[in-house]
Length: 213
Length: 248
Image 1 (tube, rainbow over the protein chains, first blue to last red):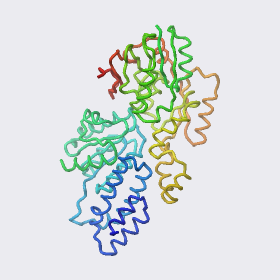
Image 2: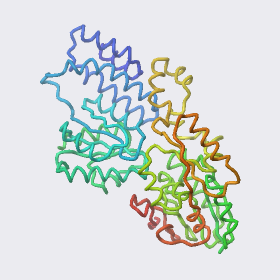
Image 3: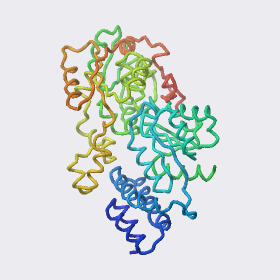
Image 4: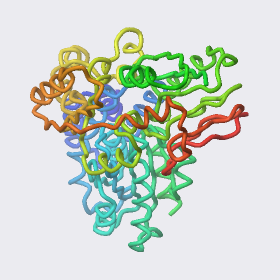
């Protein structure tokens, strides 16, 4: 088993201490930090996404896999600063909309995006539109990803889009939405650019939105 | 009129009290609250099956005692007789007496978990439906011990922080008193649960008017949707909450 396969397996199995140890060992053996993303971390999280779609993995398995991926990326990120070869996949401002306190889905999406190479600015839950606008400005975000779990709060997704437009930022940032009651047609009706049916679809959506920008 | 009321059991006492005083003849069927926990599609299927079992020829209209309930009623079809649905996101609108009052309270009180007679005595699903509950299927609702057994001590500690306490962002119980309670036991139990969790407790006075207008046949368009035969329920995500659309 190559060291890349070892790391991949540790992530899929949700073994954070093993992922950390393998990452350190790989670096000790002279593997460049940037190589570990395309060869181990990204394919591992793609596999986790597939297993989730196929109902082989449920929320706990996804969470511990994402935690293991984070154990590796926490070591690697500081080493990547200034590495011209490694370009961030983009910056995503994410949060659960105002009035809504559900965060498990949003957290999973954030962790999946992070291990796919995105920089994440997580604003938490019950996020007012002004806070999204300020974060987009401060971090020069490419994508805003909003979550809602209630039909009473999903209308606040439109408030975020309106606030971005009012601030003159709507053309600079793509907006994607998701959460149990959210549908593709709802996303279109409020003028969002993308919709993620589940966490792995959200990663695909974020990638294509950044590519199209 | 002769009406059929198909309702979530969460309204059991409120509907029984109101049906008793209705000018109309109403047959009542309550369905388990646990239907809410099994996911949108399965909830829809079971509600449609319950509607399809109704001998519609015997009635002038069918009353659906549900809110939009996380889209659980979306797509339900009226066949031979009109289907009457309150314009409500969920049951709290019916307890509060209007969608406006509920939204006003909801927006000014994030993190509130509501209690009523039904939520106190029928809030926890059991039996078959608890096994089908989405939370269970997604791997949530596990005890710390179960998490340790499946994922090891280290991961279990992490998972417990993330998903162990599903209500971690909630901080208040609001008991809605409807005026039909025979004693203080429901309020008392809610106070005790709030104390046990260290949450705030608030009591608000509900308004049974919307439930009464529903069973009395006073179906103002602003408060109720009348789904004509051959149509189905669609969500609008606007102030009117639900609309009727032509069924295929």
